[in-house]
Length: 477
Ligand SMILES: *Cc1c(COP(=O)(O)O)cnc(C)c1O
View 1 (cartoon, rainbow, N blue to C red):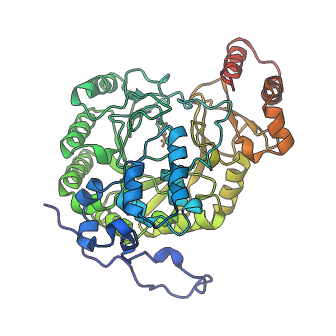
View 2 (tube, rainbow, N blue to C red):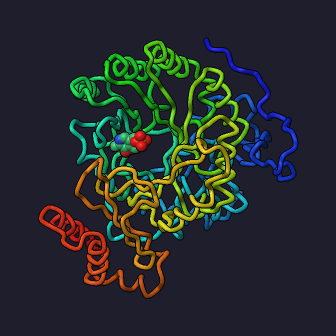
């Protein structure tokens, strides 16, 4: 049994005067109210119940009927009709913990940044970009064995399961995560020890690999036994030095860190074992909005901090969620205050069902420019674009060419796929009306892509030229 820390979480201000002392310190204030009691279905739920991870999991909202049941007459009927239309188009099912559900501003769900991430509205969704791909990052192509993507020389991505405690509408792995929907048939898989053996064996035979990202899916959906099994097997491989356990859990189900002693105990045992071996185990999590942060987040972080666990954050840049500098700077400061290191902000991947959430590359570049200097340099996230086609994560301003008018950008990835070019495209809705019209004409959009490539590589040869032709072929609508 692991003791909880009872240190007060809302730390009173205790800093001396400084240049910014008169500025409001919003990032140090954590919500402590019983916000869930505003939801008709949960008005009687006590703090102790709400704080229990089992109650959270059991009461998670997983279909429209439950959305209706919990909200009652809190929102007009038209809202449910709109969600119904959203779910008909969306590549993801819904699963929302009461914690996140109750943090949505139900007086204005249409504009709410949390609602936007987890509950799609038909009226807000847009047709997918002509160059979207279900596996936009080519994770399956770069997989030497099932469940393992090996793209970079010394680090790999391991996907031991494809379920999560919440489902994000914009999931980059919507092709496999969270079960089939009306629009997508999926081979979603749960945790399965036998099936992981091939990945372990590949890693034993790959001495160049030093770093494993254990993602999915979400590590919160593994049992303590599964987590121990994966941790022990990977740590036993001599050349593996670093493990990252990826979970959105701290953002959307912080109660698990506070009340699931078995899971936390298993994680801490792996963490301790790694330390004894001179290796490292971290948690990587996924907060996107300051609105996801409350005293529960701070308490979960406090417990992990007390155990010397390093936690880093990867956010996704999204229109109407966090694409304002005030929002990003508040998020950065809040995470830092909780001892959580902002690591990456991702340019949105070009996957289905998320066109309305994507932002133009230029917006990300400008936001990074403005954010830098906000706090300690090691707490300022790096903005990256994960290059479609498997180029890997590239610094957002390191494109070879970017035309904000056509929205086409061209990238290289010398360490990952030398000699190849990669393309990223801004969302069409952000382009001028004339340009949007051009994009509807196949010959026009091909000309725009060819022109962008020509700017970078005037004499494109064999392989590369073929790849571009293949890419142009996928844009069928
Ligand atoms: C993101 C990712 C990694 C880890 O990359 P970092 O930049 O070190 O966080 C490893 N493999 C794949 C396939 C990835 O997508």
